Amino acid sequence: MPMTITEKILAAAAGKDSVKPGELINAKVDLVLANDITAPVAIKEFQKIGVAKVWDKERVTLVPDHFVPNKDIKSAEQAKMVRDFAHSQELTNYFEVGRMGIEHCLLPEQGLVGPGDVVIGADSHTCTYGALGAFATGVGSTDLAAAMALGETWFKVPETIKFVYNGQLGPWIGGKDLILYTIGKIGVDGALYQAMEFCGEAISQLSMDGRFTMANMAIEAGGKNGIIQPDEITRQYVEGRTKRPYKFYTSDPDAHYAKVYEFDVAKIEPQVAFPHLPENTRPVSEAGGIEIHQAVIGSCTNGRIEDLRLAANVLKGNKVNKKVRLIIIPGTQEIYRQAMHEGLFDIFLDAGAAVSTPTCGPCLGGYMGILAQGERCISTTNRNFVGRMGHVESEVYLSNPAVAAASAITGHISHPEEVL
Image (spheres, rainbow, N blue to C red):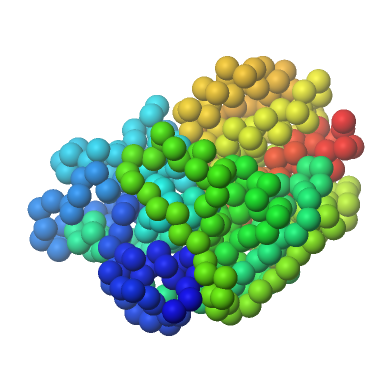
């Protein structure tokens, strides 16, 4: 029977010839992932199971990235529990401070996920890896504990919605704008427990960094997973990088979709999501004049080298507004090193920005940029819920890195062309 790429990957993992939406399956996983917030819960549940060792020490990955370097005693205790478990289990892929990165930037970079994989993580943005043509989704820590023991988990096969992006991308338009525009059209529950399959001419033009951004925010539309069929750009990224054999899956031409949306990207401006939902999107031209106090460029959504280059292009020769704090957070140590070698740090520091070690930090209101009452932040992160980055009476606006950088310069939400 005809199947979508998501259905094909799940069928293979379940050892079945085919699956259909709504079907309950047990599927083998290729990788399980947790961080310093979610792993401690999973570790406690794993220890209750009574199994001495994880199912495969090569396939259980732990990345402390949310509150590290540790911000207080509680976060230090969380990180210590993860560290002790990783060492006792002799996990190959435990990433300590100084070698770690934001998990969803780090794993593809390190070749730990590849096309055709089934990946679960105790973090909702695990869907990022769909950019490689993998089925990747977030799960609860208890489900993760069982998968650490068994190497498999259960799924209800999701329906798939196809999103077709036609036309040529305009200046300053990237993956962040496409996904914000999409969420603005369908809402934060518009793809609830459904696979979001992104395709079309504009997607084929996107770099891997842009694709990671789109898949990352599928969860902001309620999606079970986001996925892009692998192509030559994917192949160039994974060849010589991915540590395990991989397989390219594609949707059958006559596969069934629950819905199909088509967008003309030539009509899309840089997007800004207003408080307090990612669906509250407007073109940047409708956001002018909104004063900001902080700008954040980073996170698992937009902390990659392409994002930092984009910000540097806007910041070069300019200064951060004296009323604004600009915080830039490279996604991994390798991205940090590359940005440093390319001279991007000089541009950031000359502009008056602060550059951080890799961390999720302010994205979840952890640290490194907490907002006070009444403050506004424009951020390249993925969520802007009430109190997400600090005080419940603060506001977070979401944008691409160029808009965030331009806004840091002017002191209000701005199109990049305002400063160039």
